[in-house]
Image (tube, rainbow, N blue to C red; front, side):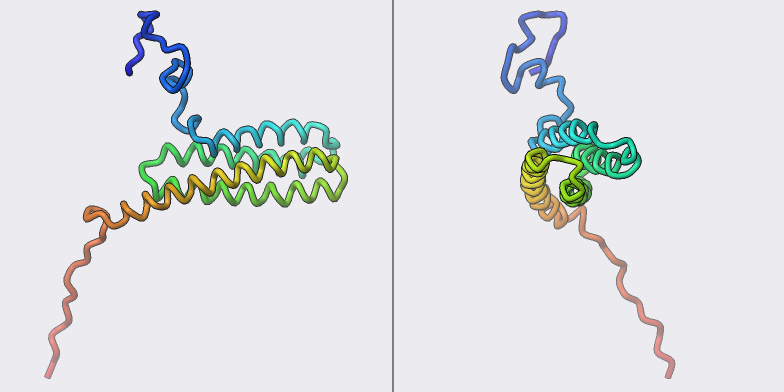
Length: 165
């Protein structure tokens, strides 16, 4: 369905064909990105209460890891093929692992209450689970496309030097 802004009756009111859905960036439709984005928002909220002495330490590190997770899903979805997208999802998974350790660290340093750490970790696990699912799906596509005739490297025939007798 194409959107014609000059016609009010062409604007869908809800569902996958609604105007808001049509105007979304492609990555915004991915559940993995949505979960990573929620994790970023909550990480930002939680780190606002950190002491000023941690502004360039744990505050910055946690925010960058959470942002990186969502940003890599977004960036990877815009790449040319599933192999490149898979590489960005791999980076996302690394950022989520980094955030996992950061949550343990701030809990042990008592910068965040146990309940908030559990909530943050629950969001991180959900983002990780959805990202792994997307990674597996993209990997299947990458593996299938890797064996297409246009993707198989061709090598020139091997030529051996003439044997000298």
